[in-house]
Image (tube, rainbow, N blue to C red; front, side):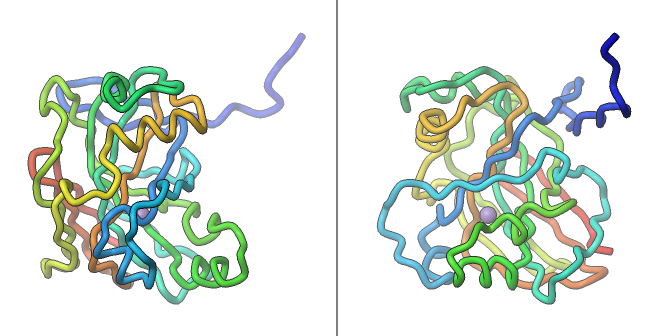
Length: 227
Ligand code: MN
C-alpha cells in the first residue's frame, strides 16, 4: 500500500476578501517592468520581452512579521501589484488573458540585492537573491467581482511612514494582460498561481524593525515588519 513517508506540506493559503481561501500553486515575478526602475538599476528600458523569475509557493507569507533573511547585507523592498490566477491559461491572447484572473493583491518582492548582483555579474541564476524563505509578503486577495481589473492608480511603498516608492500601475511596460499572454506561452498557468508584476523606482534597503506598507489604489494595502 502506498503511503506518505512523511506528511505532505500544507499549502500556502491567502485570505480572499468576501470569504474563502486561495491556495497558492506557483509564483511568477516580472522583472524590469517600470521604465524608471529599469533606469535606476542601470538597464535600458527599451521594451523587450518581459524578464520572468519565480519564487517557491512557501516563500509567500501573509504574516505581519517577516524574519530578516540570512546571508545578506543588503535586503531590498520592491512594492508590486500581484495578480491571482483563477483559471487555466495556455497560449492565451492578450484579449482573452484577463479571463484567467481571479483577483488582485499587493506584495513585496523582497530581494537579497547583494546576492542578486553577484549572480547577475557571474551570469548565474537569481534564485538565492529572490527566492528565499519569506521573500514574498502579500495581502488579502480582492476578487475581480469586487474591484474589477485595475489598469491605473497609484502604487506606493513606505518604510516607517516615509514614502520611498511611488508610481502608477498604468506605467507598467508590460500590462497585466500582456504579462499573462506572454507567460502562458512559456508555462501552463493554473488556478492558484500568483504573478508579481514588477516595481516602480525607489527601491532601497530594509533593516530589522522596519515597518513596510504597500498600497495600490483601488486594490488593497499590506503592512509587515521586518524582525
Ligand atoms: Mn520585483
